[in-house]
Length: 158
Image 1 (cartoon, rainbow, N blue to C red):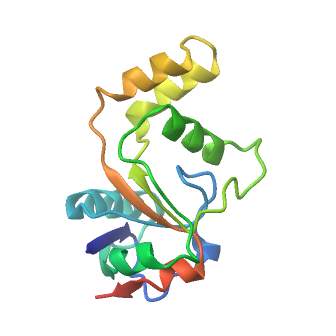
Image 2: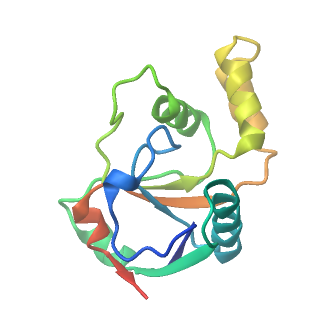
């Protein structure tokens, strides 16, 4: 499967030290199967940090990764209560990080439109079922998160 990474620089080698913490699935390397989503991220990153908007293409051997019993893979098919709590834990600066031990996590992106729902939940304005229900009506994009060198071994730069 083809995956894309949008940035302000070409990715020649994946360097976890350059990955930012407190993201949806933690500190790691993020990609998407939606090329337009990667293009938008590249433009946004370049406008904030300078440089050129660049989308780097990768091939992900998902079938082989899924067969590798040494890898721990978590997939969220839709935003739900479990996903929301997982994202909030990874984004929290009060939690110990890494907050999980998955090599790969696949699931929806918690974009800025979802941040308000998270804040309302954290402030006690809504409960967890209301948060999960609110997520059903959001346009959701996807992300693939690679957390370890063992996981990255299933990516090939194109």
